Length: 148
Image (cartoon, rainbow, N blue to C red; front, side, top):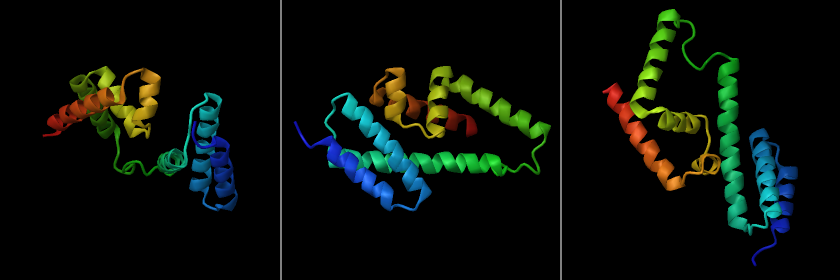
């Protein structure tokens, strides 16, 4: 069948006990949750897959915390020079992008910008990762054509 997934869980637990980095700790905890879900579904999970889970989750946690920090400290944009006209212009540009891509592909780009992986989006939408990659590529080309 393969390696015992509980060995990987124990290894992640020991990593969690040793780390002092908040990003790593949150990423390891999320990977442990994913590993438990895999165990519950009787999936074979090896050392390499567990390591990839941790790396992906740490990156996602860093992005999530950066977004929260930017919102909390108002550094997501130049808020000093941002008036009603700038906000309206940004909204108009977003609407143009949504119209150029189509609502389905625009939602895909937004989900990717929020830090969701293609695997997560694929699981939720039922589309294949290959199809999502192709849709995202075409949508980005359409958005870049607007900027040109």
